[in-house]
Image 1 (tube, rainbow, N blue to C red):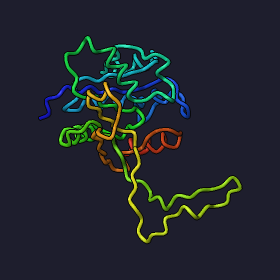
Image 2 (tube, helix red, strand yellow):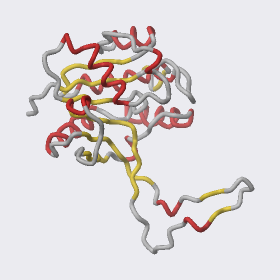
Image 3 (spheres, one colour):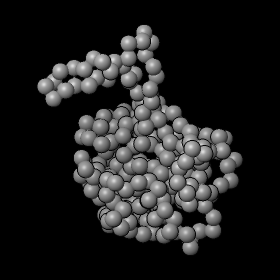
Image 4 (cartoon, one colour):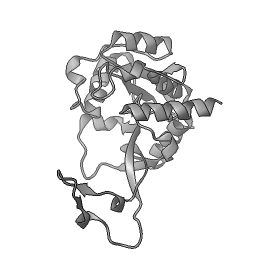
Amino acid sequence: MIKKNIIAIIPAKKNSTRLNNKNLKNIASKKLIWFSINAALKSKYISRVIVSTDCKKIKSYSEKSGADVPFIRPKKLCSDKTQMLDILRHTNKEIINSISKIDAFIILQPTSPLRDYKDIDSAIKFFYKKKADYVTSFSEAMPRDWYFKIGSNKKINYKIINKGKNHNTNYLLNGAIYIYNYKLLKKNFSKKTKCYSFLMPREKSIDIDFKIDFEIANFLLNKKKA
């Protein structure tokens, strides 16, 4: 059993670039953010679930769903340029006086509703098995030689295609899980930082960014309930 104080942070700002207010959109009879809150609360290893938001409606719904929302995130930390470590450091600053010790933070983005508590617990066990500083989740992607450059005149650039006979396996950040050793908050990533990849199946790696992602996730979640 892992006896560590692991804090889950669910970052959920009001506005997003492509799908506005998506964290409170209905999907499979729930609000999108509910799935990440529920998964975190079911984890065997997470000791506290915190939602970091700039929105009072998200705050209210999150608290009703069982999460803590002890502060409102400032607007300056809600831009597209805001980094994960910025959110972690802000959260740490806000809660440091209410908690004795933190061993690790795990960020669970609401846009990954198919990631469940089993994935979270497996990632945490992997994190400590590797004695990692940082772990993030990936899923298998199409081989790079399936990608093309297309010019403004729609001409295909064949030069970048891998001409080898075998397709190389490539992996894509799926945005579902990020685990940080607490020590990383006081320093930046370097060559000495022990970073590892946690692999997840593609069917659990939908990252909702566009409307079509939302529709696919809704279909899969409803299928899972059936």
